[in-house]
Length: 256
Image (cartoon, rainbow, N blue to C red; front, side, top):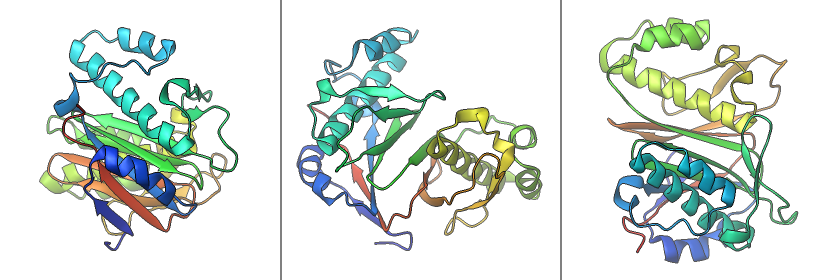
């Protein structure tokens, strides 16, 4: 276990998913990582709802459509285990800002969840304690980091980023972006809560946190965790609860 309270567990999906559900206690969070590249052509999508099928059909490119089907199929497979309901029978609803939630959950076993994907990776987060948000971004080089930060981030964040250059600027921008997106997703208000109305730190990857927020939009507490932070991807988890432990599982490279 590292300093963030993580257990990194490389497990076969079928074996782990059948057993770890009982380990998701009130103060824990489970995260699953799925390779969309390795599995993009091996899923049928037969557990998806009619609405999800319609969503899939809207994608112009086949690759994007297959990734959507795979992500939703895996979400339903995992949710079915945590909720104790067949994947096909799960009913997902959305709040007015588009955040998905499980309709009519078991009150004794609530399941809070969130999903994110970028490029070839999808992440799924589950909690029984409270709302959570997760975000992953593939770190691109052809982005004007400071222009975007000045337009969308808080003045405090922009000024801190403006002191950086090169890879430090790139890393700082994506740490800031993913932590802000994860927080917005946890709160569940979408971009009606402007990204400039709150600030996160990104200089210290060992202690990510919400620095301040406009109390007209948020007055609670938020705990943040770095999930991925390498040369290709950056990801963050935000919890409107107090997880004592975050367990990280890997889905298999081939779902057959």
